[in-house]
Length: 129
Image (cartoon, rainbow, N blue to C red; front, side, top):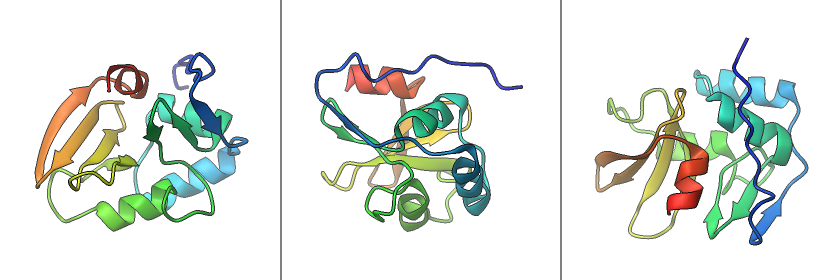
């Protein structure tokens, strides 16, 4: 059983979000990508589906290909070791910067082919950047 992590975006005044995704949709997305989302991201998907918060347009589960985690990850994934077992949480549309998360919850920025760890969790990323 996965550890429950309280993940709440309601604390932010600048928040627009969806209605949440069911467990089957989350499982289907993981299966399609061939990886597991971290528990925090799963909770985010279940509660919000997708969100815009603190200036971040986070990926999620929606019919919009531009913000759908499966479509974004497939679009941005390459054959490098960096993108293996990671999924896109935000395509910033600034200087080609893409923000990724791994199944342990660590957040990485990928700029010009160079990946750098920038946060230990999605909530830290939202607070810090």
